[in-house]
Amino acid sequence: MWFIYLSLSGALAVDLELDAHPIDSHVLTYDDVAAMPPPANSFYGVVDVENVVVVRPQGDALQQGFEYVAFSDSIKSALDGRSTTYDFAMVIHTDRLPTQFSGAAAFHLGFNNDELSGTGGYKTINPDIPVKSGLWMSSIDFWDRMGLYYSQWVFGQELGHYWLAFPEFDKGQGEGEQRDLLGRAGSHWSYFMDTTNSPVEGNKWMDNGDGSFTTDIDATPSFSELDLYMMGLIEADDVSPFFYIDVEDNAGKSKSSSPQHLYGSTPETVTGTKVMVTVDDVIAAEGDRYPTVGDSPSDFKILTVLVLAPTEMLTDEILSGAALRQQEWAEAWSDLTLGLSSVDFTVVDEGRSMPPLSTEPQLIPRGAW
Image (tube, rainbow, N blue to C red; front, top):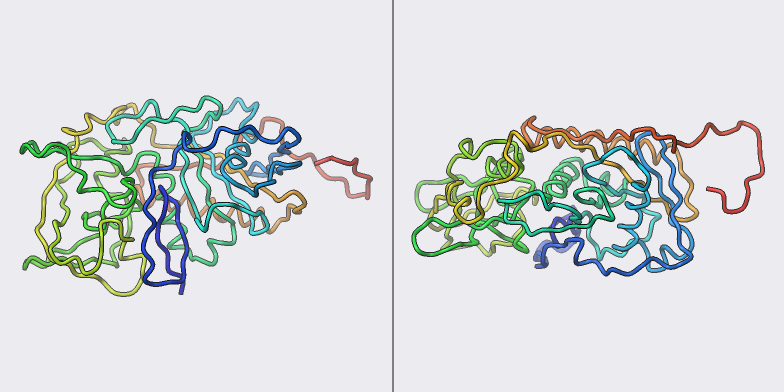
């Protein structure tokens, strides 16, 4: 059985060691990516096919494998010259594309969030890439190996990282701003925070009434009320008080531990004190969430960038696999947000589609896409 844990900001890693620990790291944003130009003789062929933008790196574009610069350049190439505005770009590929992401299976890379405040996240601005964020969602076939449950939950985390999870809180008791809600890398909820098995982690905790708490690994994952507020989908008044556990016996867990329901095996019980927190405590530390619910978008357009290896053939199997992932993730996003938000993977035709192919054999010029 695969065991999964999370490393980097929203980067899903895979390991076969059941006692592996999550890797601590900082939040990965565009500012962390080396600002190096692509090699002078590299280029990216781009063509729209159905509801994906197929990008083929050429020349020296992949001399270091598919890494962060090539990731960003592929997105820039796919967006170049489009009049349609997309909110996010999502990169997928097949197993044939050599990547350099150190075993991660997915990640979120923020490009532009200057209009967002009150969530605790810090600002990223990149006018060269006109979308909020880029998601790397690994190879199409990888999710078949991992299973639908993980696939949907991880997509929720990667897209959710545009808003989540960074806030401190201040209960106004002279202790100042506190970070007890946060776990791994300061960008996910603590293992000991009570959530709805949120895509940005934490656990659904059952209070046993005797100072002990047990994870509910069967609770259906969804974004919590606090998540939905941070995402601009509900008002602050709609967020019920919530809690985290000030642990005494942590059962070998830390705030950075992976959510218990991802193990798919047995619940975990810890002992400690329930500490209640309100959304007003969060607002006291981070300020009001802006833009307000009335001005916040809830429906998002995602441009799917299908990156092919330089000599890889585009097949119906690849296209159908991409379409299946899009359908699964669109359904998952609606479910995880309790129907309050949607994602649309439609590529608007702007004359960049592949022309009909001749049924007769023809000579193809050297260098033609």
